[in-house]
Length: 181
Image (cartoon, rainbow, N blue to C red; front, side, top):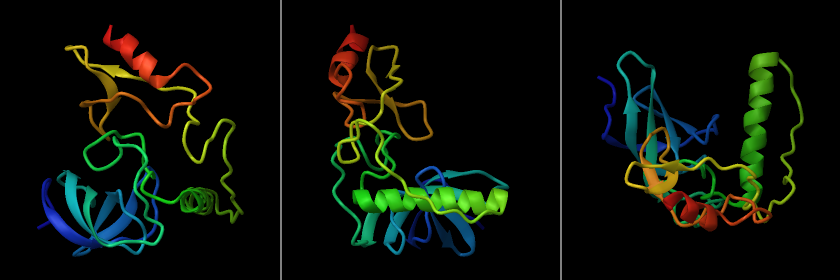
């Protein structure tokens, strides 16, 4: 019998996958786990398990053996059960870029049969991996709560600021205040 939502299992994390996930396996079943790093041993909590699917999704809710590339996320809204827009804030910047390049390389190899060199460079406005997004779509709940969605959810995480939003534009906090009216 496979894993069900809410189950917690120990996982040895493997390679990076698309969408901020990393590949792990539990008793042969593929587990796409967020908030982890390759080589880490984590406690994963299953967040999505659908009958008939060959995989489940999970969040690393505890790190049992940490990667040397793990850092404290600069954003207080990043992490399991929080905002869904900060996939790699728990990863040192150079490793973030290496992981993103690995995803692109793998996609070229798998989909096009091409082996390409990929280097992920900072975009204009990037400040140490932060403040580079020039577009943010806020969500506003019926009660006026403004924020961003939890990962793969319509639930809204109320926040005061977003460190990913470009500092070259009006502040995110100002825009959130406007959403609240």
